[in-house]
Length: 215
Image 1 (cartoon, rainbow, N blue to C red):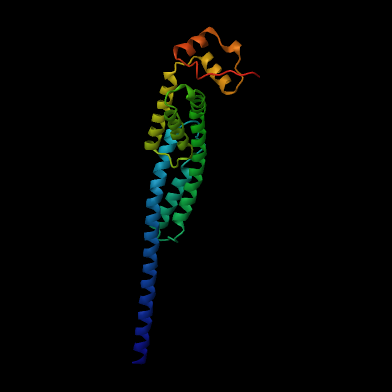
Image 2 (image 1 turned 135 degrees about the vertical axis):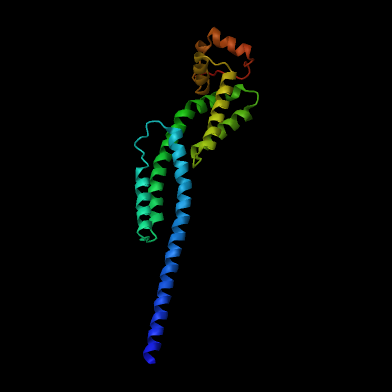
């Protein structure tokens, strides 16, 4: 009789332990599922950005992500999830994301440096300077904007085109650009007032916007 009771208690303990194991396993799988879902969103964004940049960045490979996902799949098939899989995958994703972020900043600098400098130089020649300031500000926001996806990239290109169109409005030839740069740097002289420059000033009524000074 006593032996039966002992066996019953042992069975109850075993069942409880099995239940705890099953519950812990369920928690691990649920956590992993959440992590994988979040990781998929990040991976999709990174793939979008790599396709957007696509400028000599072959050194950035997604193979480590693929390798890790296959390892996770193997762990699931063998029922050997230990709860660290999602964190390891996230670390790999973060490393690739950091590389792409550096490349985005390079891409941004390459496509905005001249435009931003030109807009800053020619701003005084527009009737509405606040509009130019707004365009400059909107472009600068993209330098720190992250993550970049197709939607943000298209918005970036729209702002680039808007800036280019504003620059075109002034019909700046190369000599006029150089003259404006000298005005900004306070290095322009009477000798820089070529017939073409004088015509540009007169045609656009910029006489009161340009000032030379003694050195």
